Image (cartoon, rainbow, N blue to C red; front, side):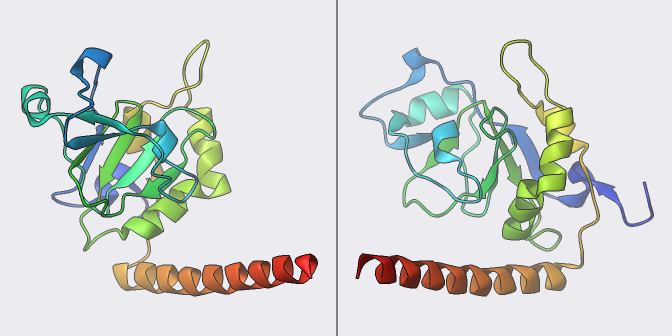
Length: 187
């Protein structure tokens, strides 16, 4: 490693976590529960998709010692497609946990900006590295231990914030241009 290169585990900083979601079996689910179970279908490529509708109750969360998600957690799909896709967990106005096939990364906000980290994880070079670490005979899976060892050189937190702001403005401009083109095609 170079002087400013770190593993992801080092880069998340003091108080940060990287862990698998929780092993929730069908018998643990409760349709009338009030804690949302976030699954692979919710983890989009750079965006939270909010698709699943599975729940557990507070007693199950306590019994299984589940990790409650907080807005700003970076969720990483440990299974394809695509393998390693990441998004930032938003405020969904209800408690939530993640299924075991989702890796939860909660960086120290003074060390890594969640949106910068998700962009880094979704970049083609990082995705290629993640693919090299995949294991499994029938279905590729990236172990959380391998994600912890990913190498990165995060810029200072102010630079990360500037990148995120610039990217948001660029994305907004691109979305407006795409909407304008769609509108012109329908006229």
